Length: 331
Image 1: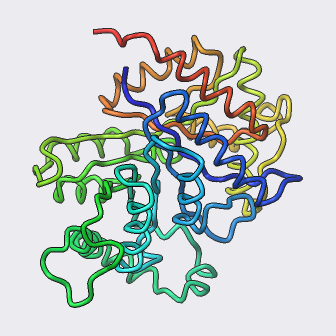
Image 2: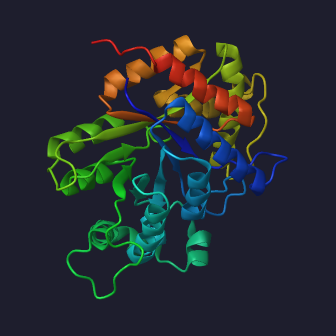
């Protein structure tokens, strides 16, 4: 069976608190570990009241203490928001706390607007342009070679598994050039999925850490006992997408029956576009849609995303998804 992983945004529910969101994420990670998921990743976002993962390394320490074997990591750290030395220290610390379990996915998009850039005191446009050099510097700080004038401690010698994240051809090209594993954000940016994976595999250059291309593709996956129940659960995610695109992001809202049908055609079309890489339904439908996606992409791993308002329903979704994919894949 292809390895499955989980991407979590640490969603803050309408009527809920940040403290509750953090506790729910830790509980979800433990469930994912018990079910046999390979990785549990948290994404960096800033200035959004419905997402509590901004201090990503701190959240990962919280998740690490709630689990014992599952790999934990950032999916990802938006490197233009930081400098490589600080990230080396943070993830070197995580590696010391949870040895052999730490992943570091790196993204070029700042994940922030001009207000956040000002708050971070960063020129994000310039920082984005130096992303390739910063990735190489971060690799060197973990490796300890070439010798650094100031050694990151913790950091130097840490066995952190580094990934390039992407939603375009740029990330695919950089991952190929550096010989790094590549994770594509097809759950929210599916437009360039096929072209990016083709380019990555075609241009891949083996490195000291990876001898062949390795792809993880993201899907929105929400499973329930019936198709109708899953569609209802997914309406919370639909509401978040519409609110974000309308410039009114907020906390994760409860599900609304018939939500999609209530929208004007252009908003429904936007949701359909986003659902190109998705599996929403009962286990039979989830299995069929995921197998079709795996066949299309040739992915080595799949990471599942999908905020659900009810934490127990999200846990149940992970259970049903794993059970749906547990049978051997067809030859």
